[in-house]
Image (cartoon, rainbow, N blue to C red; front, side, top):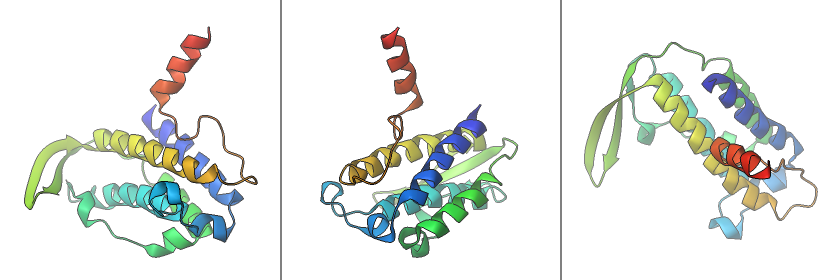
Length: 162
């Protein structure tokens, strides 16, 4: 269930990227502290990439992820990168160590691959909601009403509608 949900969410992002001009992808959005859709897309992709490249070592540190500004400035390249991610995320669950710097201290805790995939999915949805804010300025881009909405919220809305 988790892998199909990730595929669906990242595929929605790819489909959105295909609609954007280079200007729309790289335009600063005042409502997002001048961040761009490309910057949010890069952030989503790079966390997934970090998890993927950390799988073998078993140590995940999102702070030390690679930052590829081509993802941020080239929507087509970002879409290709998403496709590569999707072809490699279905791995067996295993224990991992999550490391993160907090106030100058390196924290380390146990986690696992499935838990980090779930974190990345929720993180992706959060950033898609921010991307949706940037798209409100565009009259040419079609965005699904559920783009950037948590699965639990979608289910809750369905229950309320009954």
